[in-house]
Image (cartoon, rainbow, N blue to C red; front, side):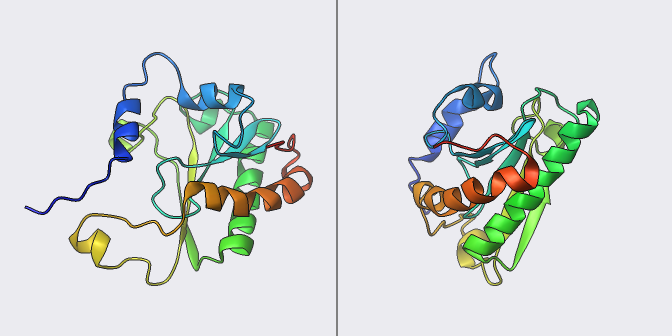
Length: 173
């Protein structure tokens, strides 16, 4: 049997037992946007990098309202949710130049929701040829850039574009 050491995954495993709190509600209450990977704060929603990304630039759009369904969001909340999704796509296209995107909302554990009590939309940039032998044969994804470096690249574009396109409170880093 081959062994692949990935000690950074232990943090994810340990966080799976989240207790009574909600990671999305808790992170946004902190005044540590850079540490919490929050790139943009809107009036009703925010954008953050996924701490355990499927690919470089994997973002999530998250409403402040703690709900597990889109139908609980008001019209202004839904509009900003989609507006920040659109803005995120524009920023990722400009900065990382992917060939495409996967967007997804997993509603419920059986649909793949890792955090099923707080709805969030995943935006995963994709590049032609980004699937190689590692994920196919080794069931392992190789990320070519640190979260800190990706955050740094995306941060300026969100600060410059977030407020005019989605009406948010601008991230202050």
